[in-house]
Amino acid sequence: MRYLVISDLHSNWEGLQAVLLDAAGKYDQIVCCGDLVGYGADPNPVVDWVRSNVVALVRGNHDRACVGLEDLEWFNPVAQAASIWTMSQLSPENIAFIRELPMGPVPVANFQLIHGSPVDEDDYLVNAADAGGAFPYAESPLIFFGHTHIQGGFRWRREQVQSIGRLHPEWQTRYLLEIDPECAYMINPGSVGQPRDGDPRAGYVLYDTDNEILFYHRVPYDFETTMRKIRDAGLPELLAARLAVGK
Ligand code: ZN
Image (tube, rainbow, N blue to C red; front, top):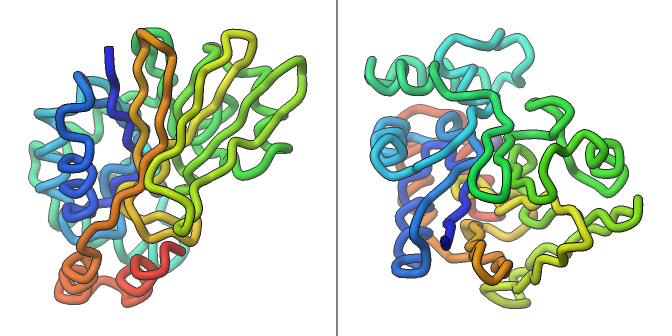
């Protein structure tokens, strides 16, 4: 089975469309590591699409916040404003769908989906030290996660953590990772809707369970349109500006 793995869509319709066009014909099923909404201006189109196209997913912290399952005190003012706006926009059907999303881990084939970390759905796996503390809690040798919006991840071999290099804009549009059966992995497909690794292109992963090959991908998208929609919606300017720099 060939999977398209996506995460952190954050109501970015143009980013999602670019990923789907780029990956067309190269996957059988779609799975998602959460944060469908929050930040961007297209929550309903994105959630409508998820409901009919994604076979397995977990909830993210922004999903909880945008349907009243999270105390907004924990969010910075920009994220708070986006959550309140998103809550006011979401259709009753999409609110009901998001409220029922599982916390994770969610098992799929030979891997699991989580949002933040195997320890806690809200923990961030940013560096090798974070991953080293989390690998002993991993319930599967292959876990896909999101939350940091940083494409890459970590390999665990004989109690040692190695970071998996993320793609640099000048490098390439895809990067191959062959899964070593001797190792455990936590893989971040990158963010579709708000990349934060200095590369504004939307990120995703294609994973083939038959030959144990995984490709990281980056694809440019029309972030000018996304930025205009964010400004037109009256959302905080920072949410528009950061898309152009991927930060
Ligand atoms: Zn997120």
